[in-house]
Length: 144
Image (cartoon, rainbow, N blue to C red; front, side):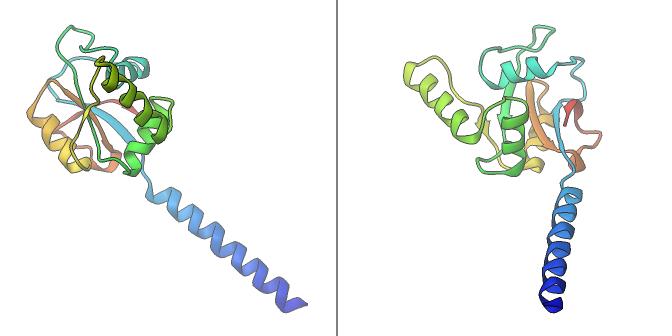
């Protein structure tokens, strides 16, 4: 009987350690723009740009959203936290807009490094990357 409880406790400790290490490894997501972009943006502004409801930054300049690849952890976190939808809901949202001709989804460009490289070269772009990848080539406008 004592052996059973020891194994049970050991398995729970391993599970808890795995969960804690997973949380520590995930650093967060930052919404970024070109460093020369003087705009600050609210979470609502960002959501409206990524849902195709707004086409410009607060100063009136063009805002072009870029997504990470479908299925990436950063994209799922962004969709649930900022867009307040799950992956299936966002696919259905864009499918309906495409079908009715009322909008097109943001371009998918790959992982954080790809998004950062594009945004560093184009002041009109807005995207999201892992906070661990943030450097002087981009400016953070929102973080979670």
